[in-house]
Length: 140
Image (cartoon, rainbow, N blue to C red; front, side, top):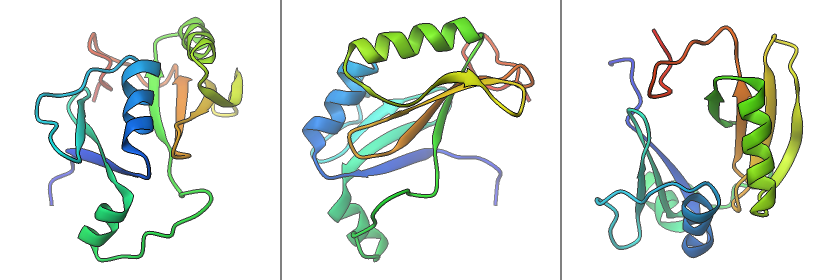
């Protein structure tokens, strides 16, 4: 199997609320391939998809009753501590729930966490050990 990731699909209970969060709180643009019950956002090299949680569970042939911490986080790395602070301030102004305020991290970086309406955790971080190219992709 090739070492790559193509799409992250989040099962959502309320598509309107979830899509509003990503479009109007984070300011992301819906991809043209979005249709019916699925919404896509083009990221740098991969896509994030939103799909009804019941349908996603049905497709995967698993129960849809997951509760609490989901055992994963998503992350967006920025180029400086200042960028982290500025983004968190902007998101707070839009009513986004900040789970952890920005602070120095034990691993040498600077990190904060926000939560989307479905309880998915996003780490907003600066990692001095993880160089980014001009598009924000991790440099090999």
